[in-house]
Length: 537
Ligand code: NOJ
Image (cartoon, rainbow, N blue to C red):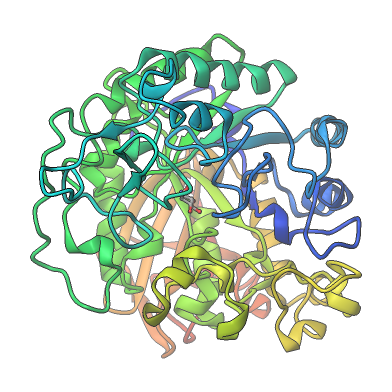
């Protein structure tokens, strides 16, 4: 429990939604989603109750990493439309009282970005030092052992200038040198460009990667590495990520945002909790929301989840606002990790925990990872490590809107295939079904908007055992009890040392709503309920 905060900001009260723009809605029949397509679907997002939309990169890019290799930070890729389309999108989002968050990728550019083309043109080019160039070792090998997240060495040899450059991801994504102040200014200008247009904030890509060890020391081996893991896991990236200097950069970015009214940033950071917390900034002057990926990575087990929630809540700095995520474009979807029945429990968890929830597009209809035949794989991570099943394509497939050609996503062949069953699993079918995942999501979001306890109330852990996870969300006298069965078998819930009485206001099985529950009751397998507790119990 944290001290009560009286005023909450939009990014604390709101429900966020991530759109992978290639896959949301195609409007010009090329099989790839675009900005006009998103505009067309804004009423759906409003209907769902979404407050803020984050779109993955839409900038000009050779698409080596599907837009995370940016060739122009202030343009729009023609695949997605043009700047007029963007301006209209922003206007239409705001007209519906929603916010728009863009992806900012400051760690690296495309190798086709004019900055890099200049940088690699000669050793004395003024932009040479905007990237990380190093001489080979005397035997010609790379300057150190740092690896690329996408496989192989993190260093690429440049024949023309006879030096290596560093790339934490693809060789087509050279890392910017954040030890050069000119890089700071260039990136803050990019931020101001979008903020001046009225964008509400940024999701900052790989925030913890931005600076490397100044001495370029070798990373140590990872004793827990196993052959089924990505090759990057062979080493512990202690010298290539999460360096102390990164916090100065984050603080500067924050200052740029703070020079506007109520803008915000989310940091993409995959680190253990105690390190993640440092990204809030020592004076709460860092990222507004360092993404909390706990629910993406820990085993789906009630005791485990209860204890991780407690650790996360306890580790938050004063004034640090929590947040939760179930899926994103880099990870398997929640339904594919825990199954459809438990994905309903996960939805309740996401939308009743304390902190800003981000929903990944399609999770609200229970979209599953779609099997992509080997000859259709597009993701470089999948292509570079073909035997490890690491392709992210399955979680990036087109949104399933309706029982129509290509699920209403596009008139043309979609860039990634749809599952054969889309005709029965789609938005339209589920909108009319009181028992669907979509109805559950929508009702949960509405409830979160209506109930201060869910929205901004305290988190009070109540109980957990091998099956059940229970907690109370409390705002003054209002108390809502959330009880979730994280297994498929029936279970019991019993509170010791307290009496409890209340009414079920939302349940995975809506038939249970309106029932009274007391101290000791049973739950069905995969059942979750939200109970309004009577005052005085
Ligand atoms: C993180 C992004 O989420 C991921 O999709 C991308 O491949 C890497 N950053 C590299 O930009």
